[in-house]
Length: 202
Image (tube, rainbow, N blue to C red; front, side):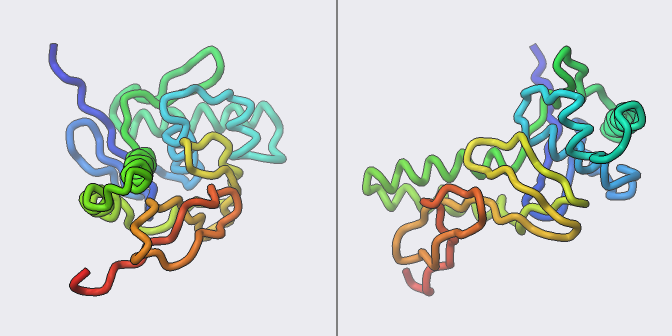
C-alpha cells in the first residue's frame, strides 16, 4: 500500500505550509488572514473536529450567524483550493484537518521526551533531542488578528493573540546549565523553561 504524503504546517514563526506534492504555499495564496487563522486552528486541533459554531465565534465574533457560516465555508473552500486536496474534512461536529503534521506538535513531543530524559538523569540523551527541537523552533507563534485559540495540543496554552502579537510556546526542559529563566507566558505549564545556548565548550 502506497504511503500517503502529509501536508506539512509550520506555525512556530510565520506560517509556512508545504503541500503533499512538496511545493510550498505562497503567503498570498491564502487570500485572507482569516483563512490562515482557520488553518492554524484546525492544525492545532491535531486531527480532532472543531464545531462550526465554535470556529465562527473565534474567527468572526460579532458577525451574524448566517454571515459567519458563509465566511467559514468560503475559508474552508479556499484552504482546499490552496492545498489542492480535501484535507479539510466536513464532520458532523464541524471540520477537521486530516493527514497533516504540525511543527508545534512535533516540538511538544520532543519536549516531553527531553523531560523524561532529564527525569532519568540522562542528560546525554537530552542533547540530540534539544537540537532537533531547536531546528523546529524559528520564532514565537503568530496569529493574524485577535483570535481566541481554543483547541491546542497538549502543552500548548489556549489564549488570545492580537494582531502582530506573539505567544511564547513551551520549550524543552534543558539541562540546568542552559536554563535562563522560567517561562512566564499566561497558560504555559510552569515547569517549562526558556532555553539559552550553553557557553562555548559546554
